[in-house]
Amino acid sequence: MVISGFMLITVKGKTDAVIEQLQKLPGVEVHHVEQEVKVVLTLEAHSVDESYRIGEAFKEIDGIVSICLAYTNFEDDEAMQHQESVQQ
Image 1 (cartoon, rainbow, N blue to C red):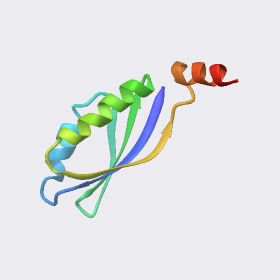
Image 2 (cartoon, rainbow, N blue to C red):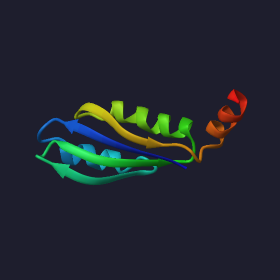
Image 3 (cartoon, helix red, strand yellow):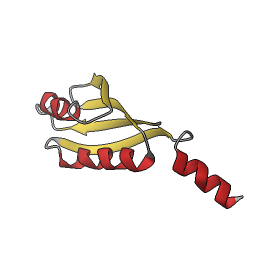
Image 4 (cartoon, one colour):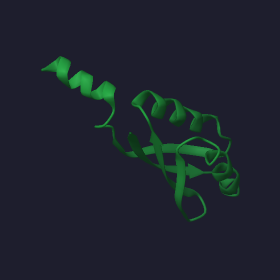
């Protein structure tokens, strides 16, 4: 499981529409909205690749000004474990 935390900045007045679109994406959970434009969310996916694909979909949502990845944990991803054993 890959868990990532994001903060998005939205266009004022479009935040509700942005949240509606975000909630249609698999694994996305909106946790907090601040000052009507800052959206804090988590994204849970089964792999790093899946997480990346879902995160890329954020770019297509009208009303998002910036996307900041604040945190990611991918130690349980099998592909990452395989990388570690190859490097040793």
